[in-house]
Image 1 (cartoon, rainbow, N blue to C red):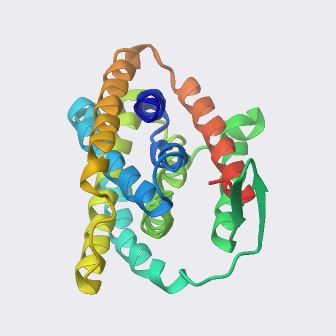
Image 2: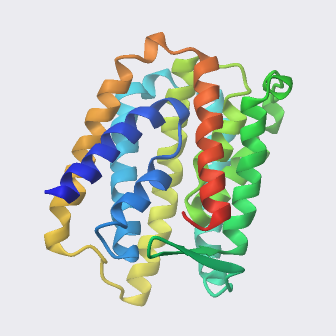
Length: 263
């Protein structure tokens, strides 16, 4: 019962918040699943909840998506996600830089985590510091942003942070930002999951989630749906300034978690 309360409570709260930021569900839910599942199962369970959440999010807010942003940013992101997912296998053996323990949990700092953490910390400053918040991104740079976001989405699953950094600075409305983020996230998820599935099939690897573990995963999906419904009810009252502040705070939190090895 404790596992259901903790996982479902986290899934509901995080899904509601990340409706506005456009990222963070997978990153923040993974440590929660890892409290009750082995790490490899937690990764798979998080991916299932994340994908189902994106599909449901499209049903709720997809109609607000900006078509130009979806094409200019989403299509290159989808293609780059294939390359990122394929490259993942080549760096699986990269050694750790350092490790430390906290409350019996071992935190590992790797080159990828440290690099992503530093990048996200930089992006957080652009959302939180008044002197940088006013900067705008010309839509001519969307192709490059899509490539970077998609590659890291396929490579490490951290697509949303880069995507949000670009999209929040294009001047779109809150509804368009949320809808566009949902559509692009789903595109990248479909792309990278197809590569992962092909890898599983090629190597003959079975799904890491056992039958008795599926009820908790399904409960987390339903909780995430409820969080999205609750978040959508406040969407009309949310300003783009509030979204950018939330985005910056989540970026800062995830940056610190990655750079320290806790995530």
